[in-house]
Image (cartoon, rainbow, N blue to C red; front, side, top):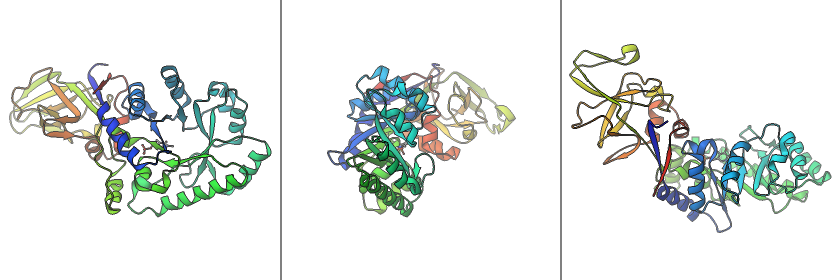
Length: 376
Ligand SMILES: *Cc1c(COP(=O)(O)O)cnc(C)c1O
């Protein structure tokens, strides 16, 4: 699908990783989270860029993503963070000491312990997210059962539920205390020296105690803030980590140009009516390509450093934008859907505001089939 190109900046990604590296002690590892096609940025190019920038591990959700990474990066350590359906039946696929697998069940740990070579086993604890992981009342009996069966653990982990949503962090602090309690329960049963990790972008930025032995860095590596609340929290704490630089630019080209008289309609449902002679450009991207339909009559792209607002409804594969005010626009001219053009910029955060979602969803929605092009 060549109606767009997604350009990726190595410089920006390296810069973002460096900002976090500066926060961390020398022993703390960074997992570059590249799940979901690297947050829509492109799995293989981003994995390569993250390793180039000095990431210690690559983090994915699914086994299939891990296998794809293994085929391209034979030496990379890959952390599988999501649950693996039918793990006990498919455990042979995990016989690789450079796979680190986060698991929640005894049966999974038992299956992984029998493998040779054996992947690293990280037990997930639920401390408040209530998604994966053993819950607190079970920790003591779980640890005792593991010990009884002589099963091995290499790491212990949890995940914060709401650091991104608030500037008041007592819930996250309670999660952290629970996690520390969990670590000491497992230590009591002989599971000492486990690699401890719980922090993602927001919590790693805000809570020094949460950085522990490893952080799992997603959204910030791509140069996007986890949320406005995270930004506010940081400044309320009197801290500053520096500017994140967006890694991605989404470009397309003008497919067609229309000259309309006053009083003509644009698009499905005729939701836009011109009130003056209007020139519009047709772009070959729509909601299938990842431009949220809620941006209909609500949002803009950049052409020659100017804002070109979206007119009418976004179609499945096309979008109309106004260019009346922009001189010398031609078919084939470059259009910035997300990124910078001269003094103007349009960010994933702008898209998120316009469509009522989060920047995570905006970037993961960009069509996987577009070419991803690495730049300096
Ligand atoms: C996606 C994910 C992360 C990364 O979160 P960001 O907010 O993007 O940094 C970390 N840990 C787990 C378990 C995840 O699923």
